[in-house]
Image 1 (spheres, rainbow, N blue to C red):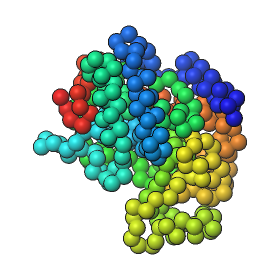
Image 2: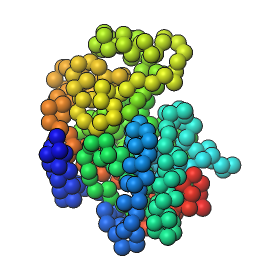
Image 3: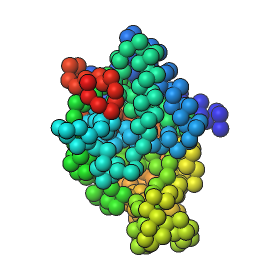
Length: 320
């Protein structure tokens, strides 16, 4: 296992360095001269947070995804509501669901202390914390492109419009990803972020009671903790190894054990390109690690604010 992990890290770092297209204004070495202590400081806090609660790794990864899909990777998801805008935290896909804001606060404080000032943006903190969460939960290590700046506003309406809900069909999911400049491979591998973490009953109730493409024993087990009404905040693991970043997610889809409707939409056993990718990654962890890393870097480059655009926030929850 240690040998495989070393191989995954080596392959992914090389791939991330050489072949992955990124925004021209982002760079993996952005903080090397201004604050070389920045990235180690982020990892220390993430490691401590995951040690306290392994689930937080999935939460930090989800924060980055939900940030990037709403007007780009600009840290807007972290902003509290103000008199001039209603932010993204209370949007339907986020309310009582996204979490980890306190960990981001801890990271920001630690990084500012290490850098002797506020030089690392909250948007970059989200990107690095997501990467470190994946790595610390036995996933691949890839080079994060850096240099994003933080938005000065956020939009509840844009969050409601842009974040794909768990009831989406395959065609809706693919259209949503394509609208963000992503493709089918990105959709399949990024959905596999659900190899870690938990889901709330309210997000999968319709699947375990109404869907027909579901293993009956799996559905019956999930119903024990998710009644047909009530218990919306009860949780179930997204796959059987929820504290380990692996390919069990894909193997679950092959067995019709995807917890979310949107997850099982990726595999219908009818020979589609999506089916072929799920089958490929279920058998090839090295290919999954490589392609997941490439897609994370690609997603992390969605419409970043760079140069003089935006700002570097002193407090991730509010504009300067």
